[in-house]
Amino acid sequence: MAGAARARRNAPPREEVLAAAMDMIAERGLEKLTMAALGREVGMSSGHLLYYFRSKDELLLQTLEWSEGRLGAERGRLLAAGGPARERLDAYVDLYVPDGHRDPHWTLWLEVWNRSLNADDDARARQAAIEGAWHRDLVALLAEGMSRGEFRKVDADRFAARLRALLDGFSIHVAIGLRGTGREQVLAHVREFVADALLVP
Image (cartoon, rainbow, N blue to C red; front, side):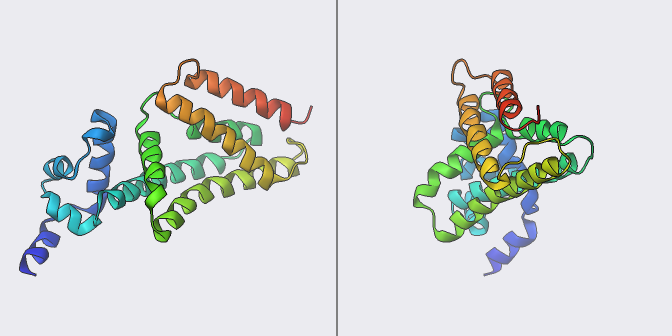
């Protein structure tokens, strides 16, 4: 027990560990993120990390939640900025789509969802919460755009589900580096879809 108490006193803040994990994914790739390597990065043993996170799956999920929290704050600022709903929808899409091949956030997202095949109910609920936040914000923006006459009258929930499915598919192609689906090409496809399906002529 004394060792555990000492570990708690000497441990870096949780956010520092999660930020270090994200930096390692960005700089070295997910395959280099081991508990031992992360421990060396933050000055903790892999045993101490396991004490806090229980498993690598939990570490990855908490890192994704931390990264999503930062994205969520940025998304909130973009959507609350005022101005035309179309411009804010473009900003939402821009934030959603990966920066390019091996985008660290999307690399992590793909790994967490791949591991979710064997995840428990709590982990699945936390993953669903991440998706739900993106969905709710998009539904609210669509509803606002319709109320202002910028967007056609659509079922906001259904349209948001379809638009996010389109974004997810294209984003996976960008993140894995599929030839012919670079970020700019994807953004052009999405802009064209939005113009055809949503904008008032």
